[in-house]
Length: 159
Ligand SMILES: Cc1cc2nc3c(=O)[nH]c(=O)nc-3n(C[C@H](O)[C@H](O)[C@H](O)COP(=O)(O)O)c2cc1C
Image (cartoon, rainbow, N blue to C red; front, side, top):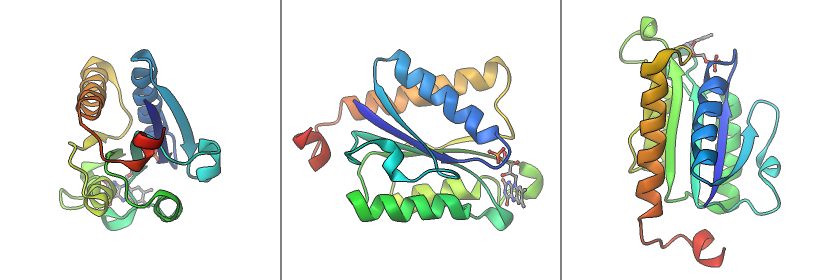
């Protein structure tokens, strides 16, 4: 499959997480388009913005909010391809901001897209065997689910 990974990361935690997700996708033989939303737009994903799966990641800003760079990217994505069916969301946050706000951006993005997939929420930076295992399991679960879905996405039918 062609997979788009796009994320916003202020201090690198979410970038580390995105890299681990990318490594797993590539290990399973998928082609990954990589967009760092803080410095690039959808054009970085190549000539065709349509992908089989969209894995979107973000850190969480004040009050559980989605960072502005990610909002801008999402607006561009929706303008180009609509709200895709196969969106899964990951991110990092800190519980010290309060349970109600923890990884709020991940929850908001998943809600916005109506994502049917589980969310991946990591506290601060991913570390240790436990996080590595969670990330691998999450990525595998998402990819297996999408691979096995009879698809009505125009992007996949045309591709
Ligand atoms: C100004 C600011 C506000 C934050 N607000 C929240 C928040 O509401 N909820 C949360 O879970 N984390 C919050 N955080 C923590 C970051 O989301 C967390 O450190 C994250 O791992 C940073 O990811 P990054 O290294 O990819 O930028 C906040 C951090 C900053 C700097």
